Image (tube, rainbow, N blue to C red; front, side):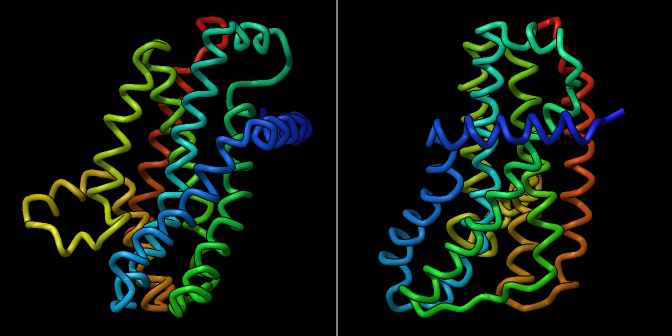
Length: 243
């Protein structure tokens, strides 16, 4: 049974490690802002519609970024035998993973606000920040932290970095992060539907640019199903004492 006290304690430790490390803060919060300035300045100076579509994509990117940092943490824990030490504590695998999911859900909120604020102040583009975003802000980190854990569990330390890149880079460029999927050829659009990030960004776009809180329900359902499957697989394959 999951203990809220153990999850809270691990959550505080995760926050301290995250803040000290700075890399996760950069990839999750600051790097999306850099990309917004870069792509917005190049392609959006005379096309506010592009910047409006870019903002949900970069919010989705900020939710994807924990996959990099979490997989790296898990790989380091494997290498340094920290998981074996955790096996001797009351902390369970699910509690350890849940604490990290909760932390990344927490930092997704300021990432969303900052991207939307910069889009408005710098490029004059407004997006809708409604209650319909909340499920996406929860399920997105839930999915990608679990996916990072699954990759780190399935691969050895030397191979997991390569696999993470093989998974994330096509997902970033083919899921609507930097340009709408509708601009791509039909065969690439079909490939885009394979990636869970596509459904996350498509749902965010419906809520943020069209102001339609119910328009992304299909995308939300697809993202939720994928997230649950990945979480269950990560927990089942993740073994303290095998690390």
